[in-house]
Image (cartoon, rainbow, N blue to C red; front, side, top):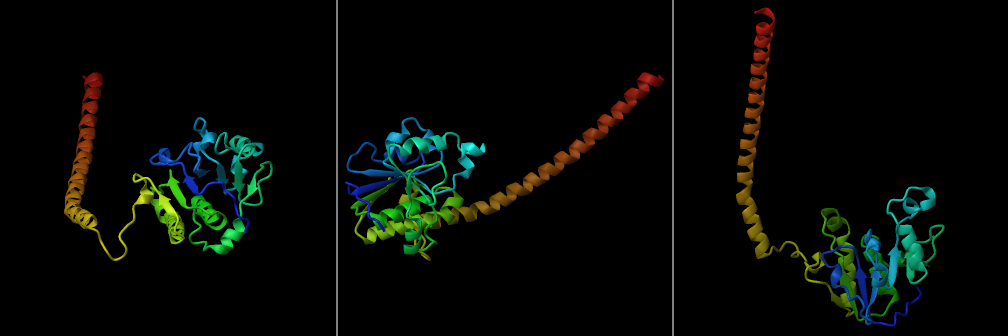
Length: 245
């Protein structure tokens, strides 16, 4: 696999999460910033915030020629960026775009597909295999939703450990979800124990509230039916009064 000569010894991986993205080393000449993420290309002057861009998804859903653009302006952003900076695509590069071929097959052969579960994981694998670095950073990368946490977080954590094993320093903002690790099984932290205790106390209260809610709903339904009957009786009496008396 071809080595990449960076000119620096630090690489920051940049995602789209607003919680920790602002902590990235923007404008710091000691760092290269490798970026990806849906939507952030729309940020004003964002093209100045990174050195390399990675798009490893298919581009058919954003091809203006097909008229089914999912992410407005993204195709044009990639075209403009490729004229100034490195833009990496999963080969083969989609027709109409220009950029660098991501070493997909080589990385896939070097690493278990179980851990290549996100664009960030692929980027980290490329850096691990192709670059000599002393430090990496993760910014705007949280995997905070349940689906992301379950399906994608493990890959990034795996490559963080591979970098650590090589003696590479890792910088993550404390506010980032990636800075926290659960206790190893079957250990349980004191905070986790307190939370479980609180949950056990709340469960019967929730059940009681649900029972009261069901009874209240039943009462409302019964009163709605009674009200409907009363109004029906009144309408019948008014009809008789107006027409037969």
